[in-house]
Amino acid sequence: MLDFMENVQNSFYDASHWNVDNSYGALNATARALLDFQTPKGLRLQISSLAAPNFATSYTLGSVGVVDGSVSYLYSSLPLHRKFKSSDLDLQHAIRGYRHLQELRRPDEDWWWEVWHSGKRIDRRDTLLYGRIFLPQSRLEALYLRRLTPTRQLRISAVSDSNLNNGGTILTLLQNDAGKYSTEYMYSTDSALLGVRGLYNFGADPRVAPTEPVSAQQVADPPHGRFSAGAELYYGLLNKSGGISTGLRFTTLPNHTGFPYTMTLTMNPLMGNLSSIYAVKAGPNLALCSRFDFNFYSYESELQLGCELWRRRSNADVEWAVKKLRPDWKQPAIAPDDDVTGILKARVDQNWRIGVLWEGRIKELLFTLGASLDLKKREQVFRAVGIELQYSS
Picture 1: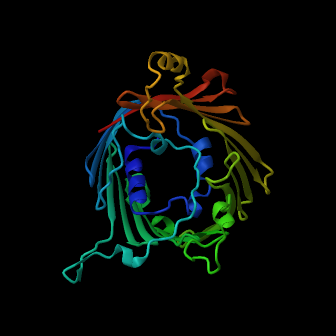
Picture 2: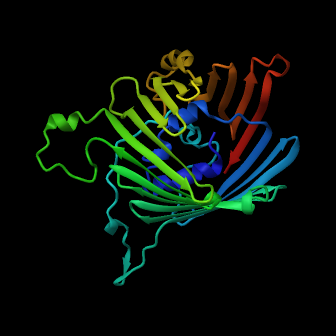
Picture 3: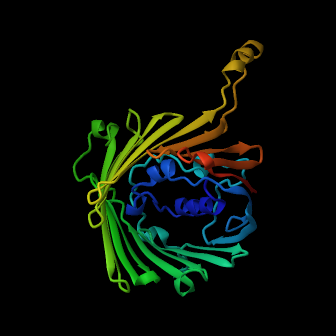
């Protein structure tokens, strides 16, 4: 389940019209959500609050051998009006799962962001500040996010920890999203790493209006899928080493009439790694995913399978009684996830390492219950078991 602060940051992206899915780094977002989920260890409690539309706080207390915790603060210059109260929170926003990519939207024009008063421009660029300190380790994390233009944003993240080289590291990302394509330029103080990556979407350009008249058939039958290609290149100035990767993705769009699915192929030619992923939304409550990794140099391979099952409350048992007693009664409209009682995630690989996660809501609390198992180790089958509780107001 998403951390409260992660949910707030995603709300900032939505409010500032930034598409987090249009990035090479998000190429395998669906597979990571269905196969790479983290199972909790021990007991962890998080209490959070959006005290004002611009300010949020979060406190975490955990017990994994020793008692630890963290304190987080977040400030957004852009008011955030999404519901964050745990009893009202839309679980679609709080849980990582199969991602339905939307149609590419046309970026905002620069003049849309201009605010004038008495003949003077008074507009400011939206900014998000985030800080988190872990206790008792005294480890500090910080994030500075600023929207520079409708198609560009600057992201600076830093970590201060005595266990890291030079006592910490800073990562700077300059991100550009033009809709049709996106680029990112990065620099990290760790090994003086320089990198660039980009993603190109084939098909119509959302920035360009059609020059020829569009027929009613073309309007009624837009594209049902999108094909994307991207690459990443990075080089460390201090350790004199670099890397390169490339990837392809095809995904169906919301107007696709069949089962939504996503196919991804990524390759690292220097290391010889090849990864193929297929994920499908097999039903309104079921998603399946498979990933096959292969190395051309060592001939080693790995297979992972995962699924996500949404359990919903059924009202079929009482509908007949309601119709008999009050035929004219209309059921009030409910939120899309008001009938969700829980979400079950599971994964397994060829070595019989299994991960199971159960997420849901009990009245005012969000909970995550998980376990990690290794069936080949008979003496210690359970590798980790834990539960996380979240309350936000």
